[in-house]
Amino acid sequence: MDYEMWLRLFSKDVVVDLISMPIAMYDEGGISSTNKRDASREILRILMVHGITLLKGLLYNVWMILRTVGLRIFRSFQLY
Image (cartoon, rainbow, N blue to C red; front, side, top):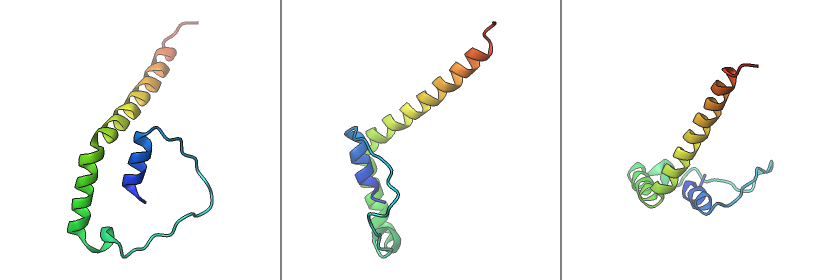
């Protein structure tokens, strides 16, 4: 998958949807599978450019989980 493309889409709040048919084919001879050093450099570059987007997404997901769990715990202690 094009990891950087997904980060760019999510950083722009683009709405995505799941489709059940293939729309792309990937070549297994790309940088990621043949040259580990170049792949590592590419990952580092992506993290440097999109690190804030990743952090915001992570924090949002953690907040949603804590909020959901917190509401369930709070509701379990309510007296009827």
